[in-house]
Length: 325
Image (cartoon, rainbow, N blue to C red):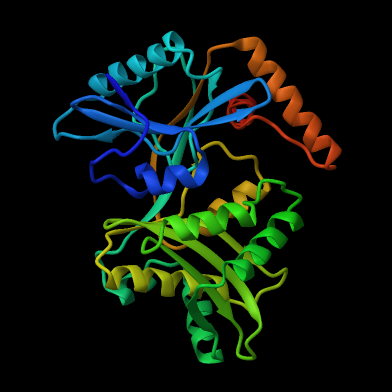
């Protein structure tokens, strides 16, 4: 196995490319063998080094087996331990859906909802839930407009307001979004939807490569016009279909849901587009248990000071699974 930390000269999916990774952290790289590639960033805070995979394992050859991928992930974990690369491997980004997990991992089921763009736009619309199809058609008749813009600040404010309304501190910073927009020039689009009077109803930040578009962040006003957000996604799908992309990915899905929760509502929203669930795993590997425990205490304390709450994502899903078993 080789660890490459700068300038990898391989065509990779968008979440594995250097221009994406350096938007997330100054410390990043790729675990590389003849068969697999796995990109990562390292987040350093105080005494903690947290490694995060930016996507699932990238296969470099066809006909590789799940056992071979598992062996590769075990090699990665061993390398992290031997080279003291990090204190713990945190849950990967929401877009990452692993086929397997390493032996030392604490794993949970994870997935993502994705929609094929190989169909005509009429066929894609026909896959929407009946009520949603009607709302999209009404939005068109009402004069709802969707446009691609360059103004990242307008989208940021809408996304931030949405996260704040949901009592979440996990919205992206303006600095990060500006860096993302600069680094991914040609692979990022900002969409907004406005009512017939030009009032903003919602927004979306979507990054993409030659095959797949990823709905990275989105926002809406408290009571958007009926069908406006769904119409925005429909138009985004149309845009990416014209560019020859094959999939529209809604990025991340918990397979264990608490009834009536905000997460359940979000996933129902994604599913109603006719998207199908691609399922697999998410995991974490704790190399230094004491540091990981202190990290969780620190983060929880920060959230309490901000009058919010925090639960480690793997812990949250495992708790849900245990309650439903």
